[in-house]
Length: 221
Ligand code: 0O2
Image (tube, rainbow, N blue to C red):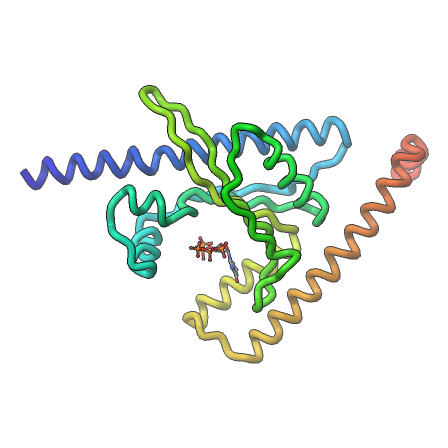
């Protein structure tokens, strides 16, 4: 019957989405471990915060239509690779590359693709490091390789991207030229800030390494 068919379909979708949630949980745990370990070893935290999200069924459908793909679960699995997404905000650009190297080195992860929009920013000024990663998820009766999109950026890049995103939607995707120019300029300012912060950070770490106690004393004053 139709009702029975609907019930089966709903179960299939729930099971389908569940796997992506588990993949996000698994990546979250990996990040937590790196974060805690780094904090203990270096007394500082390279990961400011992380935010994960599952793409909503509406956005999945929209993207499928846009790409002209079939509406079946296997088609969704192979065509929409950002159903599970995690955004990691770091303090410094060097932390971004450190983190990506750490993930590359984990043998259970398969790096499918890396897009470096920091080395090569997008035309509008967007910067981030994007990694498409496959992670194994173990369930009661099966194991699946699940694709997760990881976006790593600095606080400044994140600040820029969230404002740009808002403007893009506010203007229904056709933003006036003067705002596009301003945004590009703001992206360049963000890059300059990131570079300056990195320089200061480096200088402080060098002092701290050579005379750890002295600096602690200085900071107390
Ligand atoms: P949402 O709402 O964040 O999920 P895809 O479009 O995913 O099929 P593509 O073009 O290879 O494939 O993806 P890309 O360029 O690697 O990254 C797509 C995601 O990066 C976007 O997801 C945004 O989150 C982010 N992004 C990329 N470019 C920009 C940009 O110019 N401005 C901002 N603010 N974010 C950007 P979605 O699905 O578009 O949106």
